[in-house]
Length: 337
Image (cartoon, rainbow, N blue to C red; front, top):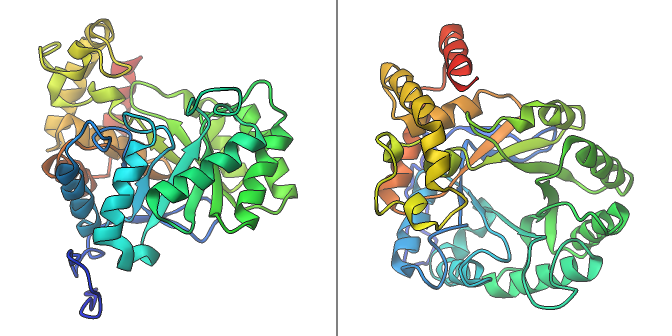
């Protein structure tokens, strides 16, 4: 399917064959189709990062058919800077492609000082979406998430705020992230009663971290909600980077992420054995890890980060082999167990 882009006026002309090879999966029972891989802007898009590199990554993503870009109010560093940088790139490169993009942002973690800059109050969520839209230069986002449960604010208030954000035209759909199965069930009931399109749960999920399989995926299927998996590579452990331990210049060594050297050492034997299976499949470990998640019918997309355009291209090659034999799946389970 080639696309005629001659009418567009922009410094960036997207690849006319961008939809030829990407796989798109339905999000729950909604009308939304997401690319099998989506691009997360958690790292590499803040003011501390190179803006041109971020621009190259976003252009490459869209040229590969990745239409879903995932942000949050506090992505950076500093907080808000990923959204602001995205807004700059969007204005220059993607404004004429707005209707082809599915853009997400979130609120729920610490964002600004004082009692109204965190968690799940109506005041925080509505203030946050207004700030996010301004930073990104958007009239609306396609989906707005509550980023984490709030143990103290009534769920009715938090979900009611999400509903009003949709009614105000600031988001088309809503989602939640990091909610446990019972919390998800309650949120789904409230949103259904409010007649709000709740379509996605963003959850941490990888070969090494399978908590979503203990009720959440089943819960989402019952409510017609899709899952989008983040940290599919377990903070980089499911890549070639740590096969021989912790390199001096790695993120784990620099304590720049939630990954530390002790965790890598603890999982090293598993990682090395998983890599053998990946090689036999003709894949890198990272590619197999992504493919393994996509086999789940409830998973609409896998959210990947990228420090370079080439790294993103490498991850997309996971789609070249999505089939697993029973023996492969059993061996993976035995290694992890």
